Image (cartoon, rainbow, N blue to C red; front, side, top):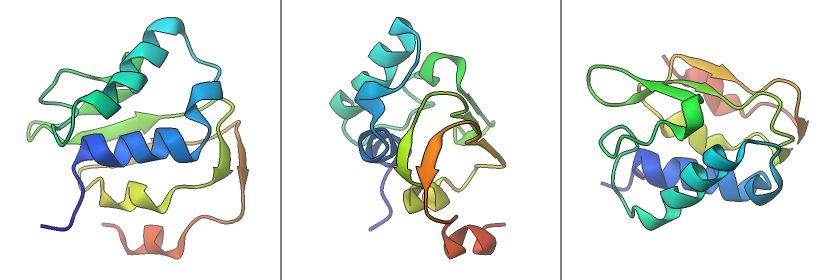
Length: 108
């Protein structure tokens, strides 16, 4: 399958939005940085719930992701559309530029 794992998706989100400069707690930063060391493993399978910024469903998919107030920058990452279990996403109070990707309208 060409679809990246949730760990890969979230690692890319972290990298592409200036994650190393995010305003988050030290424990959160360590958890997010650890994503890159977990290869293709799923976030929920590893017990990495990203410093309390995510919850998982019974199928071990990220269903809720809160990236509010972390001072993220850049464009809204289109890779988030690949989080198939995602039902709630909070990106408020950040420095995103551009528009929300059109593909987000196709997600059900």
